[in-house]
Length: 162
Image 1 (spheres, rainbow, N blue to C red):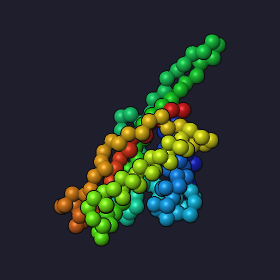
Image 2: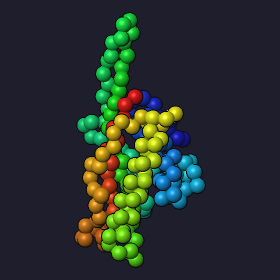
Image 3: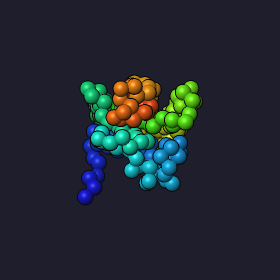
Image 4: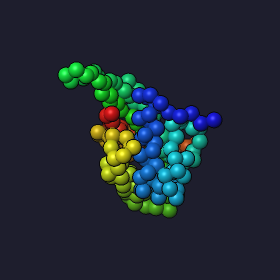
């Protein structure tokens, strides 16, 4: 049975998944025909696998969510904001020259960021207020390649408000 997301922690996380799945560049990257297929490539839990392409949406430790009460005449309301993390990881094409492999990955990440910025806040999509690179882009270390493969990864910090 699938759990329906609810509340101030689950909804932004699920909305990030929905936003990412609707990005055309993400769909092309994972070989999905539509957003419904692309959702299968976005995990909320780290997996013990080397299957790539990989997208992992997660809470940002210590900064995931906050709310502030606002007063406006006779009405009071809370506004919330938070930070989510999005890890993107892809295998390195071994037949590709080093600079081309790096540029292929950074082009992909840039295309996904552009799509997020275009869709953010429209309709049911997460109201993204900031995007920053928290870690990477980086290539797997030499001693990791035997066990985890040769891959590039980046962690994006996604600020949101609701």
